[in-house]
Each structure stands twice: as C-alpha cells, then as structure tokens.
Image (cartoon, rainbow, N blue to C red):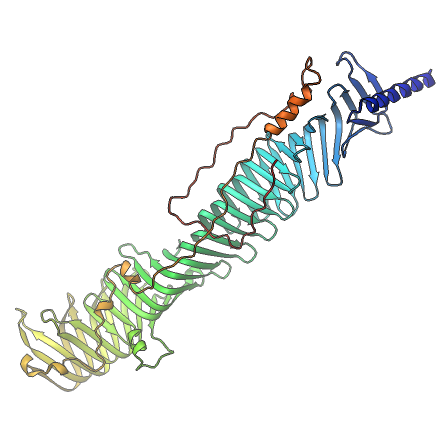
Length: 604
C-alpha cells in the first residue's frame, strides 16, 4: 500500500512537471514532498507540501523560493507560499516571511508577517513588503526598520529600496538611531553602500554635545561629516552657529559656516556675525572673517566691534576675543579704532594695539594708531587699555601708553581744539563718562579758556611734569599742573594759528563711527561666493505606476472569468504631505561644493 502511494505521488508530480513544460509555465516546482489538487481552493489549483527532509522549492527567472506549503494556480501563473517562506535573488537579496504571493506574469511579490529583507549592507524588517522584480524595487507602507551596522537603525512609516542603486528612500516619521546621535527628518534618501544620507524637510541630528537643525542636508554616516542648508543651525552646549551653509565634523568637534553667519554665546551674552566661520568645540575656539562683527549684549547699551578677522578662544569663564586689522568699536557713548584689539572677558580688560610691522613715523602706521572717543573727547596713543567692571558692565578706567594725546573740540570756535599730551594717560569713568584724567610725564596743554557766558578769555599753553584734569558734563572744569615748567595765557589775536596745535596733533573725528553701519564704512565691497544648494526633494513616482498597472491588467486577460490574483494585494496610494519650502525669496542657498554629488537612480 505504501509503495502504491509513493508511485501515485511520483506519477502526479511527474504529470505536473510535464504539464508545466508543455504549457511553458514560468514557475517551476523543483521539489515537493507531497502534491495534490484541492477543488475546495479552486479548480486546477495545485497544493504542495514539504516533507521531513526539505521544504517545497520553486524557481522563476533567477529567484529561488522555499516554503512549508504552496498553492499554485497554473492558469494565472500565480503562487501562494505559507510558513517559513524564503526568497533568494542571486547572492545578494534574501527575504523571509510567514506568507508570500508571487505572480510570474507581473513579477511582483507580496510578503507579510515578520518580513525580513537582507542585502549585503543592511537588513530591512517590516510587516508587509512589496517586491517588484521588474523595477528591482521593494516597498512598504506599514512602518519598517532598516539596520546597518555602521550607520545605526532607521525607521519610517513608508520606505522604498532601489536594489540596483543600493538606495533607500524613507518617508514620514523617519528616525535614524546611532550610538553617537539620533536623526529625525520627514524625508531621507539613504545609500547603503557608502552610508550617504540626504535629508529633506525639517530635520534634527541630536548628539551628546550638539544638536543640528536644517531643512536640506547631507550626512556621511561613515565619516560622521555633513553639510546643512536652509535655516541651518548647530547648537552646542553654550554656543549656537547659524548660517546659509554649515559643515560639520563630529570626530573633530569642528564646524564651519559660509554666508550670513550668526554665532551666539548664551553664557557670555555675546553674538558674532560674519560670512565665514570656523568653530572648534573641544578647543572652545571660534574664527570669523568677512565683515566680522562681535556684539557684547549689555542690559542698557551693547558694544559692537568690527574687524577683518575675529578669534575667540577659551572656556566661557575665561574667554579671550582677538580682533585683527582695522578694528572699530561702537557704543552709544564710546567709539574706537585700532589695528588690533585684545579683550579678556574675565578681567574686563580691552587692549587696543598699534601695528608692529610699521615704524612709528610711517604714515600708514599713524593712520592705524589706536584712537578712542568718549562723548566729546578723543584719546590716542601707541597702546590703549580699557578696563570695565565685569559685574556692572560699565567702564571703570583707561590707560594710554606712549604718546598719549587727549583732544576735544572747543565748544564755540570752528578750528579750536583743547589738547593735552604726555607720555602716559590714566582716565577714570563714572556712569560711562570720563570725569578724571591724569597725564603723566612731559605733559603739555593748549586750552581755550572761556567765562560763564562762553566768552573767550584767552588761549593757555603750558608745560609741566604731570597734569590732572577734572571733567564735568563733558567739559574740562579744572586743570592742575604738577611740577609746572612754564605756561601763559595769550589773547586769541596774539597766539599764532601755527602754534595752536601741539606736536603730534591728529584730529580724527571724521573717522569716528556714530552707528553700527558706520563700522563698515571703510570696507571694500562685499562679494559673497555664489552658492549652489542641495537639490530640492523630488517625490518618487507611485510604486504602482502606469507600467506596473499595465502588467497587472495584462496578467488577468488570460482568465477574464476569474478574479485577477495579481491585483488582489496591490498597495494603496499613500497620502504624503508635500514638503513646505522654508526658504525665503532672495535668500542665498548654501554651498555644497564638497558634498558628493547626489547619487541618481533610475526609479523606473
């Protein structure tokens, strides 16, 4: 009896194979432990079961499929696979599932139940997956997870895998989790071979020491470097970097920015602006150039400093700011100009430094000699030190070293100047106004003396060892001469005009900035680099496109009286909210000159 059953099975199985060959069906059953027909399923349907030795095995145009049970519908060349399903395409694609449908006519597979698709660089897990072998694309819309060892885990509501390009396209609630950071975005194109990721829409990358935001971005998950654009911003622990284009290197703790940059220091209440910047987080240093502007925010009156180059170093409690080349200062009651400036925010010391590479007699060096204006007073010298009270944020004192010169315009005459000069000068401030000045060693003065009616009494010229000056309401009230050598008061008509200026006199009132805009008055025209941004997001065609629809319809023509099995589990069209552009008209795009050109793929 047992031999009869085996003989009957062999005859049936051979008949099936022979009929497949005669009818030239594409699906071929390579092995089945048991085979029978079941009219309860459908007339002509063949059922195949595994035996103890191995699973049911069938093939079709380069793919191999195994399962515990299969139902084959020869008239539609369609197969259903149940339990422990495995599909392999060559040596690279492997898929397992609990259930699978496959149409040889459309070459479309539908898999469900703990689906796992594996390729050399990644593993995709989802509940339902569609695999179009003609286009070599896999698609899910029931949430999926992709695991890539070096990049982390990516989840999304909708995803598509382009096998020929090793490219994933993730849509809606996209999250990439890596041991170093977590990436959230609305759209993500990810290339599994090189780890390149393209971000579209509002996106964040949050790490232990930084948070990145952008609305267009590129990130190399292997090298941990990226370029970010459109409202791009990097938040460090106490510093925020914003710009048209940002570059980021996680391993070096480095970031650079190009065009329309703002760096905000939340601890020290300062802002630095410019058009090219480099930030080294681990070293607590920052470099800014191209119309660099540093703003120290104070409760009542901020201080603005402009230079060709700004360098900020040190921890927040001991931060140093260095400004180089044609530096200008502006505050409502204070202004200054110098070749270089050094600011110590811990001590409140600001040093205005003269050029060293030019001689003191050089005309260019004289033009760059540090100058400071406070209300109506101008002070110059080889070096000027400003000392501020770090608690009250008000000026405390100043020191002028070598060739100190204090000048103020006479209140009435057009060409009269009150002048005091000496080797050194020490000034004291109250409520940010200069009220006491000591000129030390080789002091000289020329003063226009007036009575209470502002009538000129005469012009005083004197020399002494030192001079002490008291200033009230921006006007010299009292002058004391210490160790006076000589001096006299002359009627205006008896004092030659050629003698009315002390040696080294240099009135530079026309250089004084009276606004933030004036800080840039001497700058050459600003030519920012023309920046090409990352390509805008291009929505993919529907997975069920015209080509696939045509294949499905063609598959059903052979059996018009029956339900077209190739059409029964097609994915429904998914509603995806379009990306809204956050880029304002006229706003420059960000540079991507060093970003690898976006890998293109034929999605058909």
